Image (spheres, rainbow, N blue to C red):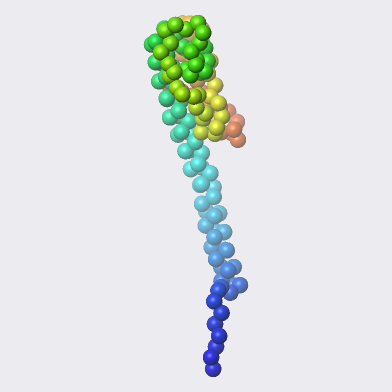
Length: 131
């Protein structure tokens, strides 16, 4: 009596594996989105600090803050004290969006506004540079 055993998994075994995977995904899925969001926010804050440092260097060289972030990459025509480029390119935030920058009028504090709009899926999720 030689019983022939076929390799592979039975239907019941496959269903058990799928059920275990489903439970695992249900437990990890919501946390995974949260972890990814924290990484994007952390990357954005780091990039904001880097841009802030370059804005300060530009200010030390020229005596004022740039009109736009592009002035950190390309010398403005009317700027003789420019010692850049201060950055190779203007980086994007953790969600691949452009940063918002606006130079305030002289004497107004803070001297500029620099922020990311944050997660595009969230309303009012602005992330500001610390000045």
